[in-house]
Length: 135
Ligand code: ATP
Image (tube, rainbow, N blue to C red; front, side, top):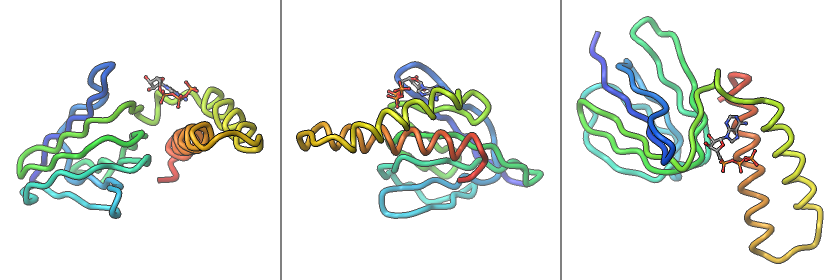
């Protein structure tokens, strides 16, 4: 079976590097499924889970907090401000971040605080979902 090399990189370093049979990622304009030999494309990513399917159909999940995906026929690169493989997600930390963001959203703040809290909430919920395998 054909495979494609996938790299997920953050400013803190590489998070994932493996050969996979399929990548499913959430771009800002919708979900894309990438198989080996895909035509080149670059797209911004949403805060969401990336699914990486190996040649046996087994999936691994990585939480990414936005960034970009670059697809080439033989390689997929994801550059994200932060990313965690499901097994490295600290669930308690994500739950605390979610509660903090929800508290901030309840307060009457300016627009900037509101947007920051909303993004923090989306990152936390994404981590919780990916940890639970809901992508
Ligand atoms: P927090 O408020 O808990 O710091 P955050 O969404 O503000 O969450 P980020 O700025 O996105 O955090 O990430 C900062 C660093 O912490 C990154 O390296 C990210 O991978 C890591 N990180 C954040 N939350 C978690 C988590 N729940 N489990 C594991 N790593 C995490």
